[in-house]
Length: 248
Image (cartoon, rainbow, N blue to C red; front, side, top):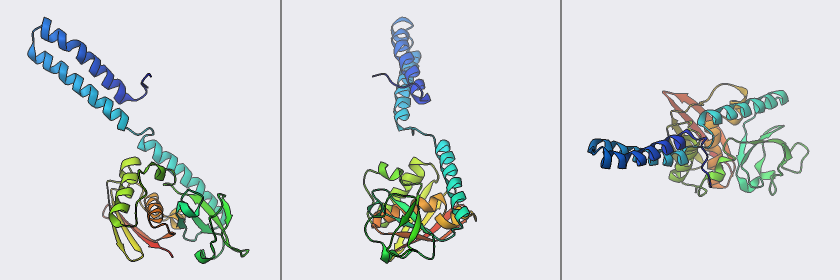
């Protein structure tokens, strides 16, 4: 099986490893130079290090992920603004949405969770209750795909949710540097340091929250297996603070 040479770390690793391996015996047996031999062996070790880094490097760069995320947000914001929807979204776990976590924005009034019966169908415009007004827009969240990359679904505890949010924000998407989570009753407080996409006073963020808050809400909803709503979101002193509510 041939290795892909599109990854710059892999190319650099192969060059260093092969060059070092070829030059090491030449430097030791023919030139009889211990320093040059040490340099060649160091090149081999650096080459293998680069090959390991090549496997750890994400397939899509953080910059490309951010561009795709912003494009999707712009399209969703245009749809919400065109329909005149400004109500807070409710984030649903995958168990209520045919295996994929999504957010519901009611078309009229507030979302009555007591009227939800069974799984909501996988469509853009969905009916969640029996009344004619029980209609909503189902929006795919930024974390819907990334949840499949988690080794295990986090449980309803602060350390597990914090670990999962950190993995997605700092590890996969490179949108933050550190995350802390605190749970009191049905309220979840998430503080994110170094957030690259923090809260702004725009239509999309008013309905669905910033990408940071959206990811935290989706993971929390999945952890509790219950709907979650973003109550408050603020950004100051380089930190994003998100207050979530776990709904019955």
